[in-house]
Image 1 (tube, chains in turn cyan, orange):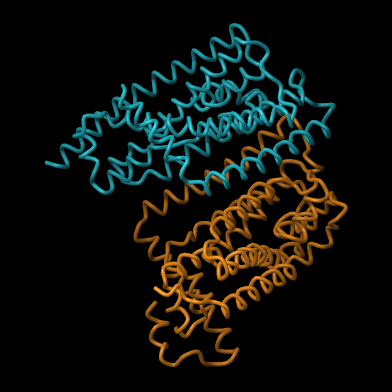
Image 2 (image 1 turned 135 degrees about the vertical axis):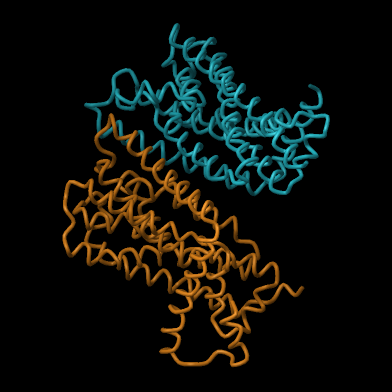
Length: 264
Length: 285
């Protein structure tokens, strides 16, 4: 376990080296927040009569700000390394090392996410001061949000991992991985909360794993999920985590076997 | 690039007439080669096609989801914003297969290849934008399909005049985008690395162009009309075509000016490029 901690630490330090990327990324984040802030304010201003009951503008703006910061943290990705190593044929060495490669990737992801968190936390404080962000209703919601976002991070990792694992069969994964990611932009509720979706679509969209990445933690943060609803949403997150982890484990051993067959 | 090399000894020759015919011909050649490369890797091509389609669908999907419970944004309905996006994407599609490769300039300069470009018998800029790195011919294809869908779901029908105007608008929009990129990269003759500048330009464009300009404060509207005139790529001509008037600063009639604005921005970028080129000194390696 200790060595995976070291991998995570190395990833954290590495992220700090690319300063220009960090600055441009932050600038993009600020601009994006500014634009979305204007968009939601204008939507509520122009449509006061039809604004959905129960979701006030401050709650919506909070959801949006925390959502963009969560995106910054969760959208880290170490798994393209699988594709690169498979293409170059050096994946075999990773199989020989006394380290389980999938766990190494997970540790790397968590380390990068920790670095992003170091940026996101002060940004969240700043946003709370400047943008009138509302805090969660009580301590339970704060804790549940943290745990829920953790599950979201792992689910996002598992989806990326599964997408990149196809490299063992196809060599090309970029398209598949980004398809999942872009579909997630709409279906996870990170840009538009799922409760704004038409009634026909909502049950289906809420059940997909994407909703467990951002939709659930963010809904908890703004106090939209309460009591039984909160627990069942988190139970769904746990279910998706277990299901996807099982699938990832099974797919990984299939991939390992395939390398052995190829390598002769 | 054998075609160009063969003429190297003759240096630059021929008048304007020759140039006018030669460059489109060379460009066709470049596109043909790109198409052949794409045909060589069919799976890759299909994956990219699906990837790009999903990308645009997700951008439009976000707009769609936003406008489920709220009917209008800044005076624009969802079908109109879909059209706005599709029009921008048409300009982007043309730009992607013509001027987008300007960003290779800093690599060519840094790695010393740019010196060779100077002694070949075609313009250096042309050689930069035809850098043989896989270009995405699927971008304009998707743009056209998306545009047809966008027009189909509008509540108003486009007139023949609109359709006649469309090519000029798309070319104008692509020139605005290309001219701005060229201006940014011309600066790389002074300061070698401009890739952060390009990222900034793209971030500004992607963040602001998706939504109608009417939701922004006046200073921002002014900025995107006169400093980085992205407003002329899609917002202003879309106002003209949809007969909307949602920004006091920009009357819909200005949509007729899109081609002129495109030419002006591109001319400014090209001028900066020429000045920079005269200043250019090799990295010397």
